[in-house]
Image (cartoon, rainbow, N blue to C red):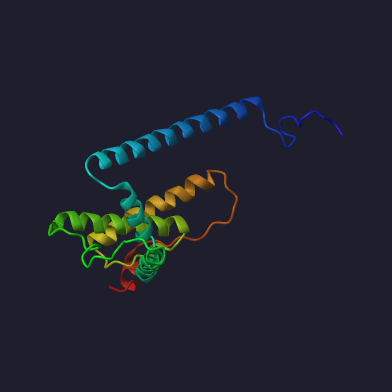
Length: 184
């Protein structure tokens, strides 16, 4: 058995190809670093503006759960706190929001569209069919879900690469038939 690595064309890689991939990997890593820096900066600005980041993290965790599961998680946490004799939730209105500030309708609509887009992204990334959009056709939520689905599909395509030979799931096309088939 030889200690010499295989040469180009013999299950090996040429130096030029290696350097090409190495450059691509470094560029991609730089993009990841830039996005991570933007994320950290956004969190710092939010905290400076008064956002409680720990409460936000809990809210994000709960938002990823089904409503029944989230309620159960909160109830169980409160039960554990009670068993540990923590004085959390002992006062009648302690867990109420404590303010009468209404969320402006425009902000709520934008938030709900963002949630729809995130759901579409997750569905697209999981390989779900485009026709599984749960929102009524023509609604802003349907359009947001569809944008997210397309973004999720682009992630799949980028992960597979241009020369992927792996199995590909057939994706549904959104056309006139798909619009009629989807329940309103």
